[in-house]
Structure formats: C-alpha cells, structure tokens
Length: 199
Image 1 (cartoon, rainbow, N blue to C red):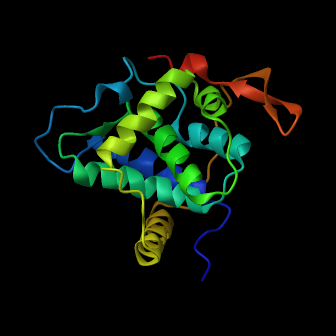
Image 2 (cartoon, rainbow, N blue to C red; image 1 turned 45 degrees about the horizontal axis):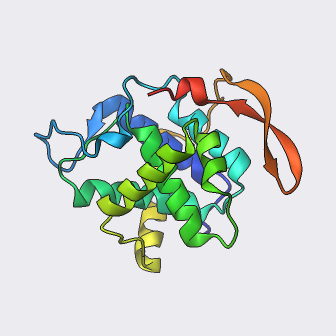
C-alpha cells in the first residue's frame, strides 16, 4: 500500500487545521501556559489558513511528498521534547515553515535558498534563519527518523485523514499575485503572503 500519495501535504494540513481548530493549542503538558521560544509567536493569528499556507509551499518548493510527513514528525517531536512549547494558531505557520525547510534539506537532494523559502513563507530571511536555529535547538539536533517510525507516522496520518475526510478542500484565494522568485533561471508568478504573516 502506497501511503505517500500526492495528497501528503493535504493530509498534514487537514490534521494540523483540525487540531488547532478543535483544541485551540496543543502541548505535551496539559497545564502549560508558557510558549517557547518566542521567535515562533506572531502578534496576531495569520489570515492565511494552514491549508493555503501548505498549498503555497507545495506549489513552489517542488519537494518530495516524504518531506511533509517528516515535517509533521518534527513538529510532533518538538512537542514531545519540549513540554513548555504549545502549538497554537499564532505559531503553527512559522513552525510548519521551519519544519518543512529542515525536512527538505534533510531528505531532498536539491533545495532552494533560505531567502526563497522565507519569501514563500512570508517572512524575512533573517527571521527564517532564527526559526531554523530555534527548531534545531528544540529538536536537540535530532533529525534522524527511522524507516519504521516514518512508516508508522505515514500510516497514522493516512488513517486520521480517512476519519476526518480526505483532507482536500478548496483553497481560499486571498493571495495577490506578484512577479518574483527566480526558479531555474525563470521568473514565476507567486502569491504574496507577507501581509498575511505579519508578526
């Protein structure tokens, strides 16, 4: 059974959106009120949905489907290793971006520069560098995932999405097109997400 269908990013988006919308915040400690580290926290909830955010990354990063599963594992690992860290609607986008960048660099043979990932994620290059360093620290630099663990997560994600529905939906198109992001020598039209990610 092939669990890594082309909808892997949609499955991860569906689960994260469901968790944030139903639980408000997710922490390994039920009594946690502290959010660490502060660099992941936006001052307000970004107006772009988790689904649209991952759809944007999926459209322009051209990473392998495995990266979405690995990014999800990293997010879960952050929560397990850091009881004081609470995943919520103000920090989930930045954590997704940092986790995706780490997963892409770990798994894929080719990847973009941090400046381009930052642009796609609606933040500055300096901020992405801080997020990436903070993520590695939260993970205790533990990026390796065994094939067995990876398969278990992929299976659980597929199973959870089957219970929630297929994880697919119509992306709300609130993004304005702009000309930017050179990719393999050409200019591509991408959507502006910066105003939706303002901290």
